[in-house]
Length: 164
Image 1 (cartoon, rainbow, N blue to C red):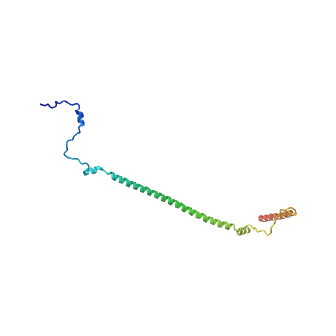
Image 2: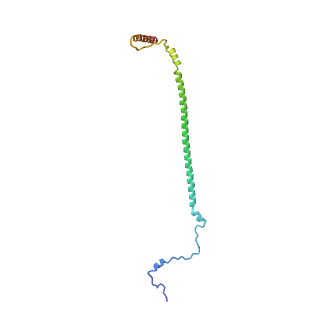
């Protein structure tokens, strides 16, 4: 006769239990992961789609920056061209003014005009005789002094005539 529970316990029984592989009882059905509509909805967005979306965003950003650079270069070019146009206009105006001033200077410095103003407005006339002064030693010096005195006397007489 045998009694249940009357066996002696082995001290190494727990160790042997750990050494033995755990055996599961056989199930009557199998679980297949990712096979239904619910699994597809829970899966979310795929990594390939995210990689493609990042690539498209990077290309769009690059094109946007390229467009901004082109607009900035175009604006700078227009500003430089406008400045050049303004400077060209200023140069043309300065050349025209310079030409006008040269013509005015040649008209105002004309000898005929100066002679006419001197004779009509101030009563000046060109001298009819010439006085020569010689600075040599001797008798010619006294003659030069007398001619110089005569010339100086004529100038004083002319000055008094202008005053009166």
